[in-house]
Image 1 (cartoon, rainbow, N blue to C red):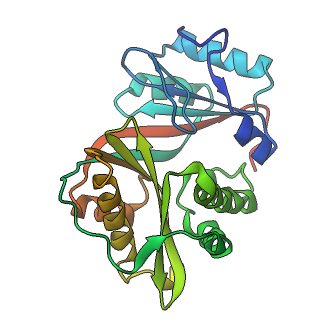
Image 2: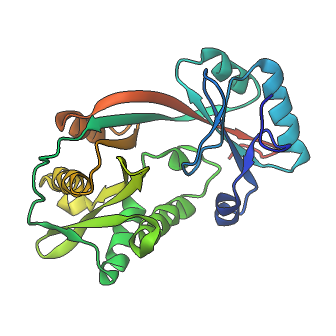
Length: 262
């Protein structure tokens, strides 16, 4: 099986420290192997039943407690192999892409760049806004840590992890956020997006996405990508209404080792 060095999967230092579990990841797709760089993704490999056995053996020998497995939705064989090994489907990962016109619509006046003073409010919004993600769907992860994961994510984004963070205001207060990432000069990626519960239904999500497209267009980006969950119908409809089209669908499985179900 193709691997980097001697490891068939990639150990995730940050996730392991955050959740106090030893966590690794692997990405599986029916295509030539490549190494991915996105957060939470590992190797891209063609996978056989024997390969699954090898990955499981490596996880056990390296005391891995949880393996994140991202599988192309067309690779039914790999899904069966992971499920036979004990993996559980926890989410669908849907990627949308948009060919960006140079004349992207101007940013709405209600949207502005984030400020350091926004961070406490944005952390609170983030801790309540991502309950449809795979971490909440896996009962091995305490809900409080899932809340803190997204609060930390938006804080790190505001402090420089993202290339830009937009904030939406509602009734004079921060009520939503969207992060932007530049990839390879001509590609952009929308990262974490959230709107406060009491500000939903006012079009802030669309305003944030519009501001992001305008920002990307101003930096010469020709294609924009965004990822959302299969259970997040609201986000899917928003992106589709703005011209985004589905490019890939992957399945997230979590495979736990020596952990009693809770």
